[in-house]
Image (cartoon, rainbow, N blue to C red):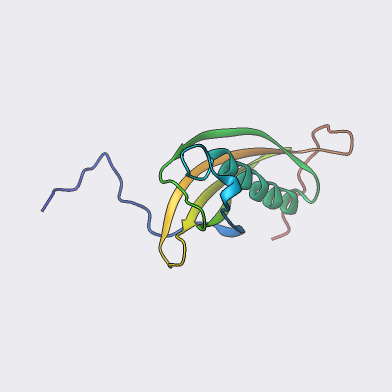
Amino acid sequence: MTAPNPSKPPAQTRPTGQLTVRTIAMPADTNANGDIFGGWVMSRMDQAGGIAGVERAQGRVVTVKVDSMVFIAPMKVGDVLEIYHEIESIGRTSMKIRMEAWAQRFQTTQRDKVTEATFTFVAVDDNGRPRPIPKHDG
């Protein structure tokens, strides 16, 4: 038996946060190696974060930053991409939303974490200028 490595945390076995988007990876989404293109995954994460951001900010938001995205596992054609979000913090005009991307493997119930990152969104008005995020009623 191998001793646990304290510098490497155990693999996460289930998503955290709220499921925001589910979509299937198609052949058109592959890179030159046949894996699903990482930019496609990141784009879906940005869309999911935008959905969560708009709901919380009660209006338009824009993405201003993505913190350290590391791809942990590849996605394949037929895998279902699941994006989960959790709002980490809310400032006056901006919010940080932690996003996790998981692959439900083709025709199985196995799920593997693909990547995670924290996205920063800013609430903006109709002119694209920062606006206050309403206080939460609850």
